[in-house]
Image (cartoon, rainbow, N blue to C red; front, side, top):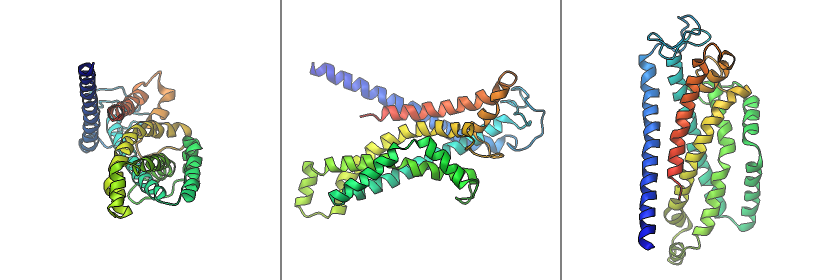
Length: 281
């Protein structure tokens, strides 16, 4: 029985390692393509062709309703969406983990109030909050060097996305502080900060990173869906969701306008999903 369990555990580890490699491979190849392809393709903003041309040698992904090259726009939009996902999730992990660490070290009454506040944030519908924030902030240039709508979306995702990490961090820190090695460190007179950084933070960060991969899957779909709600990246900046939304009425005559960006969104979602699934404990 022990040998059988060992073999099953080994098989599961190999399966998760394969999932992780495939997922990371999809994301790395996509990232390289998003960076390299726009430098060697036509201008994604130039209107120099007939509208709605099907995929051909001149335009590998066809042209959109204005005559712009879809090949260049799809890869530039994929780069933008991937940047939004990676940056927003990374900021959520950092902010949520730091806030959770601070809450875990406070007095229990303060901690109870802070946790109720976090629970209130978690109870709010994320998509509704995000759309409301995008409408309130509007098209202002919030972050330098980024299109106004992109900075707004980043901030809106972070405002509602840090709370789960703070909740996870508090829960894990309260459990870990009763472990033998943490109790021993406390008895040896180590400072609270040293105990947090060296004995609690590594375990907390591991779990939070696992959740971050899962959050990235939802964020990819969320960014693509914003265009259908009128709160996505604004023209002329290429965006996968905006391409899909703009081509919905053209499906019967120009399927490539919606289908090709949708396949890119699906590919990125599969890559993040494989990484998230391989990170389960």
